Image (cartoon, rainbow, N blue to C red; front, side, top):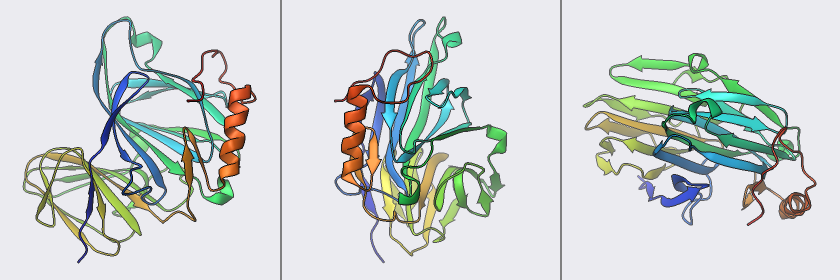
Amino acid sequence: MSLPLVIRPRAESVEGQPILRPLPSAQCRSVGPFVFFDHMLETDYPAGRGMNIRQHPHIGLSTLTYLFEGEIQHKDSLGSDQRVKAGEVSWMTAGSAIAHVERTPAELLPGSSRLHGLQVWLASPRAHEQGPGHYSHHPAASLPVSDSLGVHIRMIAGSGFCLQSPVPVLSPTLYALVQMQAATTLTVPTEHAERALYVLDGEVSLNDEAVEPCSLVILPPGEEMSLYADSESQLVLFGGAALDGPRRMNWNFVASDPALIEQARARWAAGDWPTVPGETERIELP
């Protein structure tokens, strides 16, 4: 039996929003299609302030935002303008070029607000890297759930545990929120080639080994694993089919061909990029 790989996330800040980022790391560049994993930490914003991620570009990936608390306003260069609440999915496929903005809705700024959630990036298969952009919003009630013997599973995207999410993923994907009552057990099956778990809170053991909260654990391929909740716990299981070849990541760009990244950097620097309607501020190249 192989030992799981444990990755401790690094603490960073994105436009003032504190995050933990376990993926990518030196030990692991991807899990299934997932190439980027941000845990947006619980943050209280005072009146007049909020999260404000200014206009920025993407290629070759899909972003998925899922909130536990709070709301964000998503706007993109396709013309999408969507208020996203806790428990809902905001899904954006970049294709060859897209720009977007994410911020606390203006209606919430007069009072204090709280934000807590996850944002992940999924690399697009090579056949879709240069395709058209797409945005969709999925209400909480549209996400399938199972609730049995003290284990509640919500399939955020992809499939698993006999559940299928409506989010239009581009390759075999697993992205599930799991809530376990104390003294419950869950077997993690081998239906996906690559799998990982991220413990949000609580005390969890994996095959009788304790897992620290806010740690990413890469599960050995082809092996069923047993999760045991020593206390009431919440975690994310994610993964899917292996990528169809290596990916390069540079700033907000993901591609199988480094030339596509260089072209994207040059276009953004030159202002030759689709813009978000009504937006003038943008994040410049680092």
